Amino acid sequence: MPKRKFKGNPPTISEGDVALHWDENADLWTEHVRKGWDSYREHLNNPAFLEFIGSIECKKILDAGCGEGYNTRIFAHMGAKMTGIDISHRLIEHARRAEQKEPLGICYEVASFTDLAVFAEGSFDAVVSTMALMDSPDYEKAIREIYRVLRKQGDFFFSISHPCFMTEGFGWVTDRKESKPSLIVSGYFSKKQSIERWQFSEVPEDIRKDAPLFAIPRFPRTLSEYINTLIQAGFTLKKLGEPRPSVSECRKYPYLQRWRDSGAIFLHVHCVKS
Image 1 (spheres, rainbow, N blue to C red):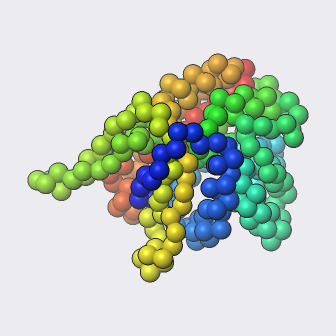
Image 2: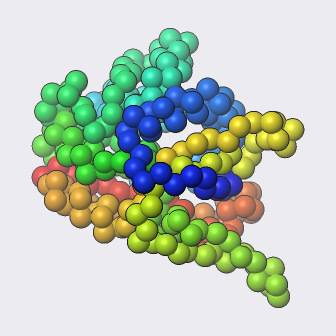
């Protein structure tokens, strides 16, 4: 898991602030993600999420908060007709360069998922969003816009950090007798916005010491806020997923064991436009 360090807690973080932080993160983020150093994405979240969404072949899909397009390209390889949007100009530049290098028919646009005016109502068969919606200061508006651009009975799949476990007071403590880490959770109801600073845990040590930390805006919400907002927008909830590492995965990647034992790091949601 990335090392988490909180510095500075501004009372309000705007969408413009979010875009600025991600533009600043973009070059290093792209380099490290494409080198496979986002190990929790590679070994837990992505395999589980791809199984969760199932077949998307020939569907017209919007990737909401696509970043530099890593997962967008995976969805395109699965046969989907992809459009990706992100608030960061710099991340979209990286995504477009990857599309030029390996054309997959993906269209990328600079846009916030809180304002999808560039797309007409009912434009997409499905919307996917991987690890992005928790980084928005206006989740409610994002959900209304995603609902609007979906066709009737269209699917919406997204993954986020699990709000019940990845709280303001998240941490680990080791039992002295058993030498077994236990998960600490506190501050679940906190509404304190923050800038979280960390690195991917798989960054090699010789690079880690000189690499700047990512600065990621965070906007705490409870599970009920995430789910009730979907229902109020008109979505029908179909399925939730809380991926748990398997025994074999933990043998292969021992750092996953504590997440098998203690809690869920990710939440997956599937709902349908009613």
